[in-house]
Length: 125
Image (cartoon, rainbow, N blue to C red):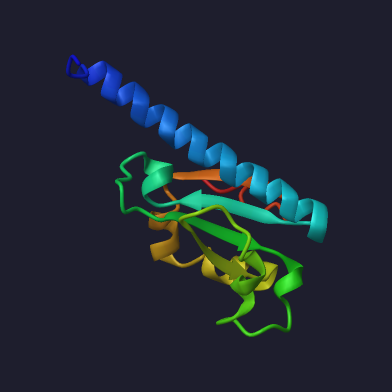
């Protein structure tokens, strides 16, 4: 078997990234079907494209469904998420406050908006 060229490796990585993004996008659509309004954004190594074999797929999921639930346990609602998904689960109010923090600006510089029913990313650079 011939070794892969750099172009082949880069193409394979891009395809792997796109497959992961599409799988999470389909999952987010299933959440919207069950819950109604959802905002979800991919960030971290899969959004940047520098993921590795051990990388999690980092996603912020924002929904009114989390209101009144314990922050530490609310992501249990996502037990059917695709493998490797690591979610942060916020209410819209929590998200609005958190997204104003400088470290989240940096963390979300490279992001893939999967759904934005709450309009939290429509006017963010």
